[in-house]
Length: 608
Image 1 (cartoon, one colour):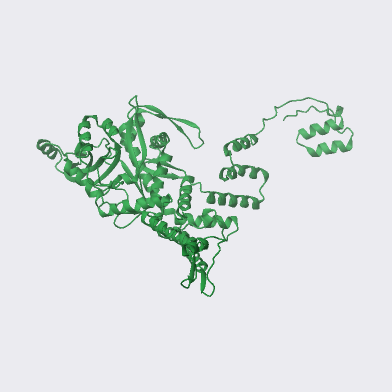
Image 2: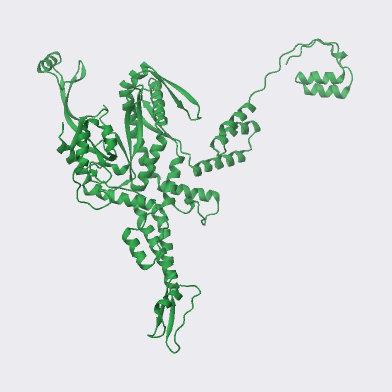
């Protein structure tokens, strides 16, 4: 069990480390640039003194929206595969359906979307996987996005999955005094005493992130420190009994095992267990074992890019300087176009202030004394140079981000639809690492869901999910499933079904052209029609496919009949009709041509 000092030291180590301090500073401006706040307060004050406009041309916003739009087009599922092919199929399919149930019940697509947006803007996003209980004490697995600025990981962790090398992960959230009292009512006196203590001397309206209390608004930070403790484990490997945990075994038991199996061997290992310490101000609220048995931190990271020192960053960080240059050059160009210079000899004008006023007007009247030199200089050349440099900065935005004008649905030199699609596919290749890292995050999420299902889903129930066709599907979770999932080992797989428009349209056009060039028989073409509809982008695909399926149904067979008749008594038209039904069109044609009896009485069985 750790003391308040130990837990506070871990938090301070994370908050005060230079790597994470740089991240907080940079991430804050990353979000501001995304939101259109691209001038500092000092720059705004300087512009105001000059009378220069504060222009913002946010070139970062459409880049982020394009990446978000591509993300929204993707459809993925977490799938579990058993190690025993065939035997584990039922339990693995059930576990996959439960994972889908968890995602649908917790609004995962929106929570992951928030995490993804934090990532592509600042380079770092976070999801929290936790369990709470409904009023009927039914356990519920939740996957919720956490503000990335509230998370402070071990600064020495460099692995993507920080469960592998991080010693601790901290979360610090600002909450009101009333909420803190409701969460920890037994500590209300300590919380109130800390809030009402003499505030530190800080006149800034923005609280430093390592402060723990805001005395002005009576808000306090609840700090959670999830940390590892290491325990030694000893395993006996016996030829008679297999692997046995003998960490807490007595000497007499070890001696008896040695007698029964002289070949027994021992292997030592170090295992980590997770604990969580919570403090508010100067009070240690609790320090306990993690409520989850999986031995993982409940926070799941999403990194877009990382520096070698571990600091996350994204493409926004790379675009801030050129976007800042665009704003400054546009502001400078407008200022130059709106101002003029005047050069004149002393005494050439009566009132210099009046001259400034008239020069700022498009129809101003300037009067100067005859015989004096007077000249007005326009700044058009200087403004043109600023605009040319601004255009260069704009083109650098596309070069740095890798997202060209074609991918942003802007006019380009490419006119062919197929050519534009291919250009967009090149962009997809450039941004693919962003989605590859997202896949790594989803694998970690799959690991959490599996572990939480094993621990908390211990009763039989029936889950209701929506399948790929948005149809309700009931998934029974039996006692056999519970036992099997607890014992078996499953591999986590991300099943991806990308629905990116450029790829989908290209596949549709390619297959349509291929079918068109084959000159297939009508029945084969009709059989391929459902495939074309499925990969097309027409609306209400399911309804259209149902109609086509109904049209392709085989008509009911005509019932068989038996008739007895005298052939010679039939008219030529009747003979032709029955000959056609008998499958002899030649005979029917001949009867119509001859119009004469050709056969004696015949008893015929006509069957169809």
